[in-house]
Image (tube, rainbow, N blue to C red):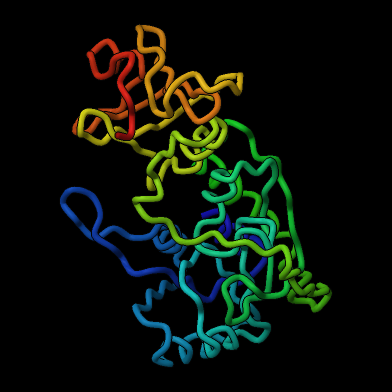
Length: 298
């Protein structure tokens, strides 16, 4: 966990708070959050509250006598007694350039909406959804082929570096807090499985951005022959002229699979048919998984 390691480099960590262990995998065995695993490795105290609004967790937080709490991708809104527990409150590392993409899934939605730039923001948390005053931002280009998973890895390191640089200044009282501009705020709502469904009746660039934004979760998908087809990677082809009904397979040979969109077309690079392993589109075609003239998404 990059931010935990960064925090250890500049401060005494009195405790690590994370979500409860959850069932995972085919056997549904309890799996620990990655930050818990790292905390145990370094010998830190770990707390995993199931409820935040009973007052019990707030009491624990106050008892730690911490200067500040660093919040990274916790996934829950903190009540006021928790926000006020550290001497200087709670600082959040948010994976967007606030006030854009407030909410649970800023990385995914920035990719899906074709942003050319994103970054991380440090802010002092209030009771709203990522509405607190900010004091540091670090921007980075978002590559046209970069997936949400790849971007998340980069932003985790960028956020850790920002916390290491700016948190001591915040604790020293030398950071100017700046209110967010509500007029340009946008939302990044929590993701659902259905959000992964591909709409081929949109421009090719939108389809391509959707696929890379939904990678790795919830995963972009469509349907063919009555079964789900996961689309893992695509390539946008040049040209804006509509070449066929959206979703229709224009080319399906041993070299590539090309699908028409509202304008332009995309090449399917990596897919996973229902009940099978992930494979290149060429291997999929060789196994008679798709033919020219078929329509995806019907």
